[in-house]
Image 1 (tube, rainbow, N blue to C red):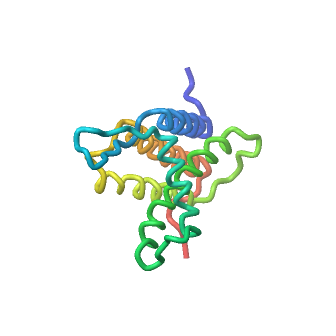
Image 2: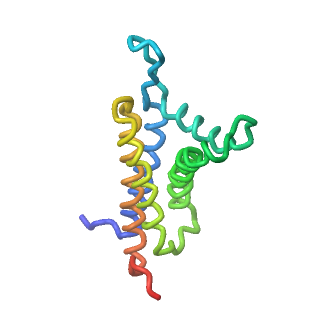
Image 3: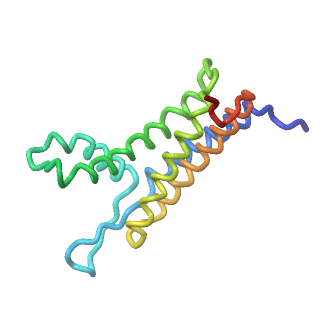
Length: 160
C-alpha cells in the first residue's frame, strides 16, 4: 500500500488538530477554587474559551486600569489567537483553495504552542484534562503546518 502524499498527510494532521480542539472544548479544563477550599467547580473548555473571549473586550469596562490590568489583558487575550488558528487552519485545509502556506506559519503556530504551554506553569494545580487536549491540539496543528510547508519545498527559515 502506498503512503499518502505529503499534502494528504498534512490534511490528516489538520483534521486531527480540529477534532482534538473540539474535544477539548467539551472536557473540563480548569478547576475554579473559591474561598472555601472544600468547594470547587469545573470550567469546561468552551467556558474557558468564552472567558478569554470576553476578556478581549475587558478594556472597554469602566473598572479596567490600564497600568495594572494591561499585561494580564494581553496575556489572556492572546489565547483567542490560538483558538482562532485552531478553528481556521483545519477548515482551510479542506477547502478547494488549499494553496501555498507561508513558511512563517509554523513559526506563528509554534509561538501559539509556547504561549499555550506557558499557562501550565502558573495554573498547574487547577488544570484538568481539557487543557492537555487543547495543548495537544496546538502541537498537532504545529506538526501539520510544518508538514504542509515542507511539502511545498519551502525552507522553514527566512532569508534576508
